[in-house]
Image 1 (cartoon, rainbow, N blue to C red):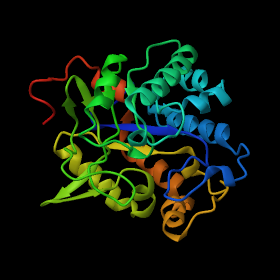
Image 2 (cartoon, one colour; image 1 turned 180 degrees about the horizontal axis):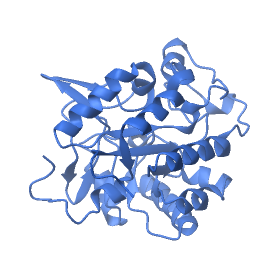
Image 3 (cartoon, rainbow, N blue to C red; image 1 turned 90 degrees about the horizontal axis):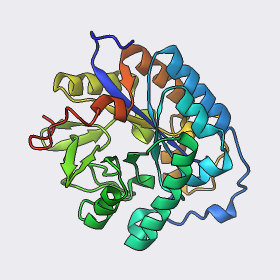
Image 4 (tube, rainbow, N blue to C red; image 1 turned 60 degrees about the vertical axis):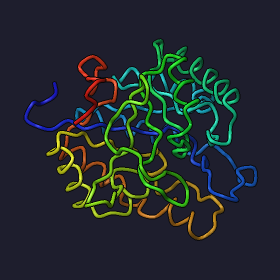
Length: 284
């Protein structure tokens, strides 16, 4: 039973292999791509969520679901939401609309068969979406998706762009859920997932979530299974991508444990319900 005396936030995980990366110049074909710890890491996350009575949305690659056919049923049986991360870990802006729709349909078919229910959410690999890609949002809607979480609301050398509304908002009939940032004047600072979660001290992450909750907004936290696993193999990367990919991994699990102790989390599906959300007025 969810307590009513705490603000509710959103927990998400991107379920993919340890070697799924899209850094410039990185070639996955050059790596030794043996299976490493994914099922064990998912089990650890599920146990942690159960201990803290948290629910989450798991964005899962179609190829990962194929390789580990027990994962989706296991996650679903624990009461979590299954959502789509695409079939392969391809950058969406490098695909044609036809290629993307084919990739999406292939992934949805696998996930829906394994979950036994309609999939309603999507997140692009590596935040590889721009707000002017109207065809992308149209294809999601046409294929029955209700929400997307692919627009990163700041510009980095890898992804994201300026001018994205960092709050939940609608693009056409699709609910868009950018990862959380805190705003100081005109400066937006990400803090709630990935490298930013691993790099920042916990007190700043906690402060950021409290600030969002004070503004009646949920924090949207995102992590990958490999990020709680210091024993994960290391990819052959240049200095900057290696720093981004691995910095802070030794402390990430401890931070996540503290986060689940200090705040209450649920899935995207359960948080919004998609019935009480006012399309006309947006999210304030």
